Length: 414
Image (spheres, one colour):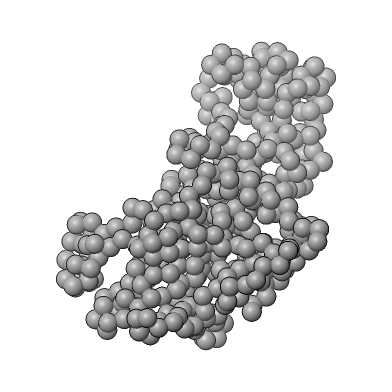
């Protein structure tokens, strides 16, 4: 596309691209914007170096003229977007990219690969956090996905309310609090379960979490309290009927006097199994596979579409849109506002092709992220985490239901 536009003389036309979802995953009531911070980091290093250009030209992907243009490529346009952690709905313009066609079209895969992954994980994680009802969640999905996707998933899970991650790279790169447990392999390594528990306690102290379901749970719990004393931090259950097992373990711990010892439940949890354990005496959940795969929706189905362009330098932007059956787009550069009622609950997502006049209960959604090629929207992860809490709190109560339903609020196009 770039090479063709350079040849036709249209590559430098001022253009506006928009990222949006035509629909939410089936049954979901809201989506969560994830990956904004990662995109801003990636954008600053998005260039075409000599080895890349050598490959592209040697394989005849591009001609020499296009390679010469790419050699000095730096995005110099503007980007606005929904702030990370905010909620979105079908048709929400969660990212608006304005620049020349040549500069902006090259960002499509970079933007969509980050946002489709991170927003899918964020949307699933948010549901899990609300299903947990205030009990902490540990992100434990690194072994169920690509190694770099695991780091990104841990980051965005923290944005949506997970307490910790077992991924130490996410801790190092993004400051996500880390926590973990020992695996069954550690128990099986030792000559006895007693030896394994004693070794872990000696290494990590009595506040550690002991895995008690390798052999006989009742025997393991009794041994754990015997070795660690009443200050034992937690026990982890990773198999069986978690609700029944948690009640049995809680009763045993209390009878032994270890009333402060917590119970951590793991074993292929998702938002539905977490909700089903609401009445069980579980103190924390470890979630892996379902989180890093978006709990059945591994992509947010976001698209990147040209919605406006000029015909000649100095002319105003004019809307453009595709009209294909099943995949139409709405032309025009967009603005977005979330209209709230007097109580502060969201009522409507208003998307317009002219800058709106804000009412007393309107919250503008697009914030500047990049201005003239310079990143202006970088923020600490804690800000995105706080924003998500506030954004979900302003949704109507039915938005947090796990049952199948429609988007929590309608999107109105003006």
